[in-house]
Image 1 (cartoon, rainbow, N blue to C red):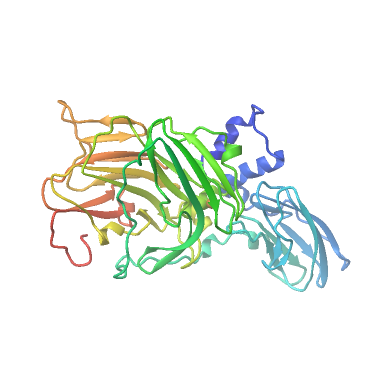
Image 2 (image 1 turned 90 degrees about the horizontal axis):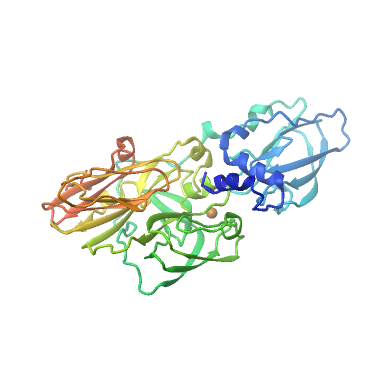
Length: 460
Ligand SMILES: [Cu+2]
């Protein structure tokens, strides 16, 4: 989960923030804590014994449907007064097809569904919400199935795309350009960010329908200096609600970080008062789904007097939780931390296939952000030693008479910093997280210093 719910918790007792419904707040909070709310399907069970139309009230929240299970007679219809008691849009459709329109928070719709001859389910059709628990079992007496077990999310049978670790990208494949451009001139930066859902290749032959800022993962990079003002306009060009949370700024969560609907835009202004390698991300619930599906980027605010170097690069570590090929990432896997790969700049072993070129002796600064959503990073380059480490706003190491050297920049999710180094001689230098289970599952790349005879199939 992002930090947003934590902020809410911090403020819950102060009365300083307002939401339309206290119920919605608690529902969002509980929903955010994942599995605890998922499997409690039995508390609202309703039973009748006739074939008159069954009349029930249904409540939708993040992320459950109450009652989670109803029993109907063969041939019986059900009239449902469906109310969205949550904080985001939801609907309820039998078999994902017949039911309410998309209901804004606080609104209701009465529908009549059935008659039912066999047990089935109704669920919220917003992406990820069914998987997160928004399912109602409709149990038809005598038809079998439809037990509480049927309300269990599909985690055990999830069918995600599979990465072939031996495959290579197509000849025309291009990696995300890791080059980090210097801060533009001026002290006011007008930036457009477009929330857009787009299909992106994440490993050879594997694509995902990723949610992005600007069509790439990581999203559009922002860079400036301490004291600069950013006027960011977020356009929602997608089909889902999205929002933005800049870790570089101090603003109220409930206002500027609010979710905007497709077609809407939101101006977000802040003054960069702190240097940092900050994460920005979509905070729309479930935020782990939006971050885990690509909605993050970097905002680099240079520390004062940052010395020039020969090359600056941006390497963002994140995880992939693969849905089916061409589909969005799997929320159930995200909640269970069952990632399929850990990657730099969103491609499995990407810079192994396309090494980052520098020259021996050149000074290199690599900015690194762990955008998670859930895994740490032990950023290391095989064959060199960092003489400068700057992490979370402060230098940890600079060249001086103590002659200190650093081997790893350690980052928890949402932390960032940079390291500086040189390569002593021409050759290939592995980029890894030294959490080696992850390096062996996609978090691996190469620097190429000078002209090198490339081994077949990349350098590993
Ligand atoms: Cu989003």
